Image 1 (spheres, rainbow, N blue to C red):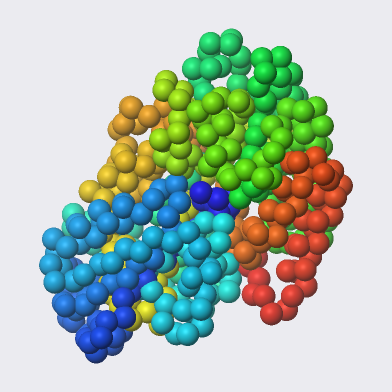
Image 2: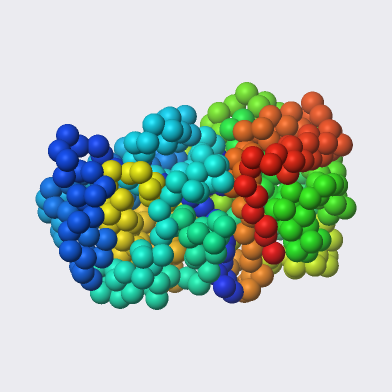
Length: 465
């Protein structure tokens, strides 16, 4: 599910941080009752906070990645119980920007969009064309409770650009390294905490005919996300702020360079499975989750659901914090990038903005949020929807432990998704992981991308503090 998650795909004032975007689009019906004005002329009430008119249609375009799209169908069915004569059409897409940018330009975007995946639309380019989401959080959910009171703290900040809360990030993504607990137990291996320990484990893996890591072409920047998290944990907030704010020489920070050099060693020692630049990313991930050709893989909370049908029985998928360089990183080994993903947006020029927001209200009901957690094995921004046993998922159990151990030491990263940098960066990372370039070339290439955006006066900037 490559996207900004790492592009794919934070959230708490003290426990998680959000930063994702997704849109649902509204259907353009032949009747004038489907236009924005008519759709919002219905009297507003607690049961109909956005004034959704009966007999209208809602077009929702949802990124069809690791979480699939039927969780929105489930929410739409819940919505149908309250608005029986409103039709919700959920349209899966794997190419959000390619399919929807022309519609933004043409003034006929969908009503709701899940702006995610490798081909997402950079939020900075469309934030002025999006509806504010404040009224959504102020409305009551389907259980009769104010939505803002049912969510983890800090939900608004990552979806706020230039003081406008325009993106509702729905899924909590805990980023880390993932491994098979059963394989590690069988081999007597201890999950590594530092890159030195990982490199030593790579030698043991090689002796067993396995690799330490692997990658797929569309998800090469998973290693960029992993590297940034490791460097931020090692060097502290100064590293994060330099990267987020596109500062000169940000990619040359000693902590970033330490991580890049460690990855370069892993590639040069033959501990990275070759051929990833020519392998589709879920096929590569199956080499890890099913064939167990590699030991650890960087990803987010979506990985278990994404690979559910291609995971070896009794794999015991388990997450751990990203690797660090030393035994005394500034933020601590337990620190996490933990933020909400799958950012949902409602375009201002959508025909049925009220319908788009009503679908989101349905998604934020306890019934729909619990269904998502149970069927996707990942938490949403709605609190109190996951039991202690994690619905029997070792991955979900490990996420709960990671969040508990991290406490307030969580952070978000937004600049890649905000500026839409993933495509350019993918080229550099595929070359680096294939051993065709080194850490110096990778650094130079990434800095050129950041510098170009920083110098472009036509691009609205965000300042992260």
